[in-house]
Image (cartoon, rainbow over all chains, first blue to last red; front, side, top):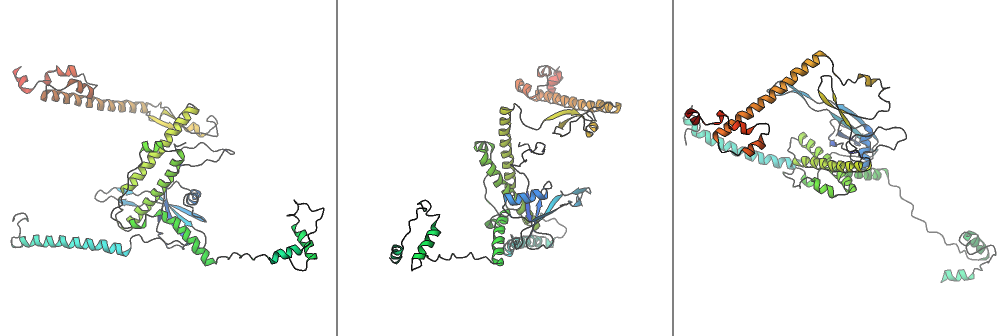
Length: 152
Length: 282
């Protein structure tokens, strides 16, 4: 049934199977230093440890030794300028242990070169803005108190 | 040549007990018998098979981690798109396109989409952490839309199958019941192992209302709804008057279509539809 509602399981019945799983997982940088064979995921809250293991082994073909999960509470904070309290969504954090000897290093997606390149363009743009501002203010220097649009 | 000569020199004993079928089975016996008569050894030393070189632990680990990283890199975008300003992609899958596909194809496509979704979520998270902008965030919407469409198509097929086989849609059944406030609500049904007469928790379900407070609340609530309805109707009426006033030749049939609750012919004859000049003249 595609309504995501499964018939009740009774002993002896055929095993219930999920044909179109709608769970999601995202691979994140571990917030605390971990051994090299441990990978951190953020998953949908409904997933159990068993689900996570099956998901990785069946869909991604990754051997898994152990799964540790915890539900992390979303952050409470005040809405700026409004004063009422808002809260981020809760999420499930999963630490997955790969077999002994396996290593995974989180890739550096934004390398220094890319960052420098972007920063260069930004500084260029900023300089141009600054230049225009200085030119504009230089006109108004001799007539203080008069708005900028006054002289053409 | 040498081998041939040897073989010729070997007098093969034809035992009555040895049949041609048993030849292969009794090879060892035969060769043993032959060897006793022969001065040369006919046995050819078997070639030593190269024994499998066991990989060292370091090599094994390197291979394992290479495999795992290859699989885990599916959670990330292609390397060309890292730090790109723009990623060119197509549109989402439409329902009409998915209806043509076979169920196995849809099943495969679902997993492709699922992996794509995971990849985009990972990249989005990483971009946020690095204070960067995700290139083309509309990709996420497209994937979600196509997943929704796919599920709908599968659901259609399911419904059709169930209707054909059982005469029911196969959807989750529901009932419309009254809650404690006296308002109608959807009550989703589900299967139980224990029948409801024997179930203790079933007694806690209340699908009726009897208190005077509830009745009073309902009276006021309905009045509120009715006032709202009346207000909107009056507003419509006023608007139609204005229309007749400003555009005396307005299409009545079209107005009847737009406002089926209003009696347009009656409103047209009202004094309020006349323009202010006409009103003065009268």
